[in-house]
Length: 639
Image 1: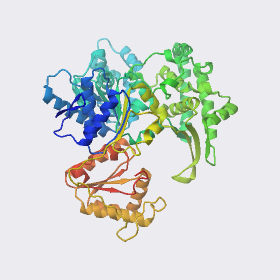
Image 2: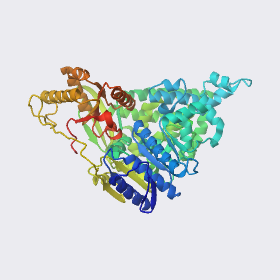
Image 3: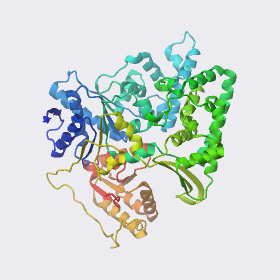
Image 4: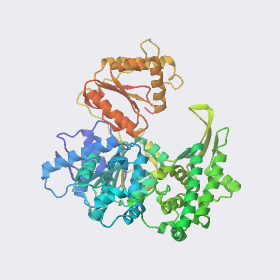
């Protein structure tokens, strides 16, 4: 259908628009007109995604000066859902304006190498770091230069690639040059992979290239919030872009996580091994190609900012600092020589090992930590600000491709840079024992960000319109204060029903008439755990198809499931339905969700144990037979 929101014509792919959808569009349009930010809450299941896509893309059509739509999601299923909804909007426009129209959108999703790789060997890897490592081993410029230098002039291109170990998909994409584009349309991740296979081009680097020309880009929060990733992927996005953070009820936690760093003693031990290997590689390079080290030294004298942009296939994670906080000056003299830099890092790691030798919880400010570091190791604050970028420069000079091995060292380098840069809004906590093993000495060092606004501030400053939206943003007035911005539009919409379609039931007593309490000090009692399990068993035996049960946290769910298993309740539930569990691993959760839906489709029925306000709870629609019943076991405090 076509209708007007004030003076804007909107193409909506359904025959009816709900009152809350129209009101949502109205608030969103006014925010875009004012070139300001918006915070909008509309319940899950009201068509929020298609409403937002219809309005923003219609606004792009009416106002060509509007930039891209950068749609940020948290999971791959959410990304695919957004692209499918956008495909429906575009198909509706084809019906209205004709399939041969000239203003079709180009929309792509961008994800990690693991989700887009089509290489016959590398794509078989399930671990992301292994995919990244093997990809770099075939696409790094120095690897390609060496391989091509060793090729026999009479060899064919295909045999040369086979002999040299280069990626044929990447080589064919590179051969096309900068003009390789996608025809206008909406491309899901699977469609990009299919197109990559048919063309013989790498879908990952193809998508990285195409986002510069796309009208709509769908990717993960980290591509805008995490400085290490955003400076590589989103650096070229213009101010006129419209940024949307969907399912953003946990955005404050994500902002805190991207600026926080945790490590234990094994990480520091791995750092020591990394430094020994780096020292060995530097010594070898001195003997074989000292010019490379001298060239790097001259670049450092001029300043790291002048080293130039690297090709996408050579990029390491970027500087962990926010762009405005990166020092645009030459590296201090005590870090320029590779030997001196390695010795500097060894002293820093040794100090961290000493600080982890605690018997009680230690909490202090970054300034206090820096003062002790200066007194004991004579390490000043300013050189620490350059450590992260200096390490990446050295690893590029050494032409390292197996970056996963150096992850511990890069983590400590990032910590050094963050420590020396940020003092306000951060604290340091050293805990001697893990809560899971309170009798085993296993100290944890935490550099904690306590201010969510630090990570997201550059996004609000850089883009003129940022939309924070979710099904649950309560209390909605709190989020602007937490994130430190002033939205032009703040509104919470309610769901309208034509009839009563939800039958809520509050269970206060179990089957044995024992009171069911969600109080923290009573939640782990045997009677509470047993009655929750029997409640799930009764529902599984009565309600057909799919059932979703929500817990308050991963730790509480693990505790309850462990007790249910010991009581034999899980075995009884399995007699009626299969059981699937959400975990912190995205790949495992995605597979569990697919198998849950498969069990519901075939009639076997299934139970999905999930987390309230988690990735699955807020990002997946359990519609029709996938969600015949829902259990909320101990509601979250904010509810």
